[in-house]
Amino acid sequence: MRFFRKLLKLLSQKAAITVFSFFVQIAMVVLGVLFAAAYFQWIWLVFLFIGVLISLYIVSREMNPAYKLSWCVFILALPVFGGLLYIFIGRQHTPRRVRKRLKKASDTSQTLFNMTNAGLLDARATLNPTGTTLADLVLNAASYPVYGNTATKYYPLGDEFFPDLVKDIKSAEKFVFMEYFIIDRGVVWDEIESALIERAAAGVDVRLIYDDVGSMFTLPRKVIKKLKAGGVRVYPFNKITFSFDMRLNNRSHRKITVVDGKIAYCGGNNIADEYANKIVRLGHWKDTHMRFEGEAVWSFTAMFLAFWHTLAPEEEIMFGEYLAPTSMDAAGYVQPLSSGPGRKDHLIQSAFINMISTAKRYVYITTPYLILDNETQTVLENAARAGVDVRIIIPHIPDKHMVYLATKSFVPVLVQAGVKIYYYTPGFIHAKMVIVDDERAFIGTCNMDYRSFYLHYECGALLYNVNTIPEMKNDFLATQSESKLVTREEVMNGANAIKRLGHAILRLISPMM
Image (cartoon, rainbow, N blue to C red; front, side):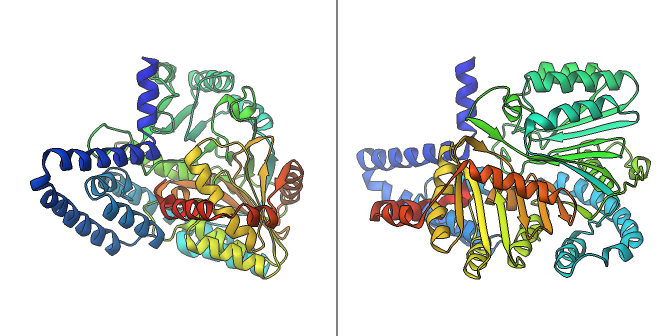
């Protein structure tokens, strides 16, 4: 049984499917030459014609040009299976029924956000000019409000985050909403599970959303049954059915906890023991999270409820019942936001580009994956060339080898443009943060890669002059001190023709990973 589970897990990876299809393609060519030489050229032409039609369809779609190019090259190079592979794993597709429910929930939440914005309009005017540009970008695109009166607490490690999370869950009096990409059994989950069931037994409204792909091999049916028996309402997001279209792409990569509408958590940590360094899987696991208390919690509540309504459409959506106005005496402003494939503005990526392009002194970034489209790569290079101190920390130990190779393929071009790249040598850095000029920051779930920008549902918070930005900066610098800088000399000395060709190929196919 373990063997078959591992095999299924391997086959569910996009890289494995791509490699498998490549070898099948070769086998088809060999068999065609050996046994059907007279007809093979006509069969090949038919598949090539179909590939051209699919490529024309891809070109006509509104999507990132690099994503189009990668798939068109792949389909035309491997016409027998390239088109089928695109249909299977390449489409940026959200099922129609899910889109309809998301739109209905979005319309309801946007009405409430507009009402919130009306009350916050004067306060927003006190933001610094650059911050206002970023705030207005997000506000005008998706109506996400900017809140004052919100206290923040920064967690530089999951080791520090999980105890507070459990403590706040245990203190819940009205409701606990949780949404996570990966939930894995272990010491961390056992504590959370116990707290959720205990609160549900006490009459608290406890709801949990998990992603059906992210938790496919880590959250067994017996755990879900136990939660439901204990009074916890549980739903998988975008449930996988083993039909022709497995819908592997559009996942909920979000990590949200809301307690009583007064406290919210968001950041990079999933629920698993490696995130708290209770087990060692890829060396020391570095991830970050943030706790919010005050007015900004309302946006996280609305985000969760919008998704919940897509999973339980029979329930009447009653956002107003969960509004719990709480004001904290805190400096600065917080703007929670989310993005996903149902939107054309790619909101979090747009926010990143705005932050980088308006930086005056520095941009500090942590990300586990660095697979860039042309827009993001260009803005990073231009910022560095303009004299902005651009630094990016990525892992030294990979969790996905093909993705890691693709990440490394972007390192030489960035370093030659003046971007400083660091490898986190103690292990794996999973934190997703952007810090700019001591004034603005992002913390959340979004990696700097195609999947997060274009295919996944993501969330996070923009921070303007809040008192935790210096803590984030200091933690970045402490992490940098444990990391290895990639020098120009290393890049130039390692730039032989074969490696350059390999990097070019990896950058070409990176949107497909």
